[in-house]
Length: 363
Image 1: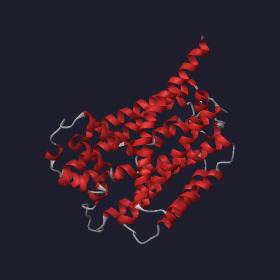
Image 2: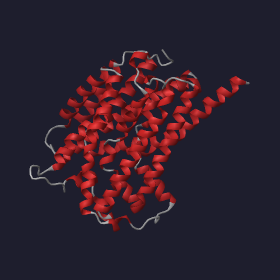
Image 3: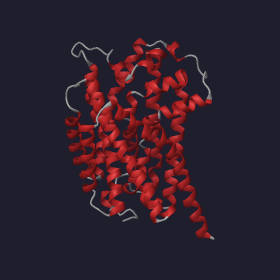
Image 4: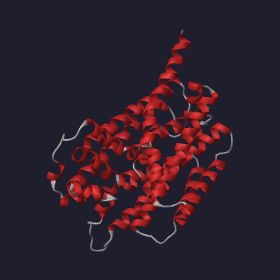
């Protein structure tokens, strides 16, 4: 047992961290990040993607450095750095963020299904199906979550046919000019890709569930690198497939790209993409709600299923009474850019405080 109270039999091998990080990052943002990125940086969007990837790698290093000093999870690290009351306050902020992220992904994907497939089916019906599935997976334990993360990554990479097919209609002059934007514009573009890069911070909660957790750092970096390369590929295909004007006006560029794929036996390939994306995105829904309910369990010493019930009911009620594009916009604004900025500032600050406490003990 460690500080977070995790028995060895519930832990997973370090290798699976690659799939946990990569599957969490590859979700809703991949479908439409190009639009905001094109508005901010145009043909220099690839620079913003590389910069965002670099920031993620630095923050992953910070997380592992924190846990090399205070092995445990986010709750334990916060209490160690700030004391019980202030530490619990910051832990509650993270729990609210995890919950808001999970709800945003659920509502966002339901919006995609409404736009592309079933506009007359009420959102609460989709939400109910997802929440039942999410509850079943989470109550199966973290090893079940990890197994599904592994399978979703393995079974989803056939979707690379979508960007590769786009090369058939490529106009490579669309990538020009390069280095044509200011540093401020590049930074704005980096902020635009943040929803596609978020997810690595779940390590803060599932770190105690990893065997020989220190050895998993290279796999966490590997998962983040795979996401960066995938986003680079999708953005490159989008810039050679669309003009910059089209890219700015297209709401779901990745999905719109699938509409040009034609087979003799399939007329609407985007239906397959949207449907299969449910398999890809389910972990984006599961892991944040697992992290949020796990955080409540750690803070208030209750069974994890009870906060999970409450969160599920709230999400269902939101889908019944408040579901619209405006509510999705508000949730996105809560997470991006404000929470991204908070992560970039808070995690290094937490490391500094913990390092200072360690240094004082040595004196």
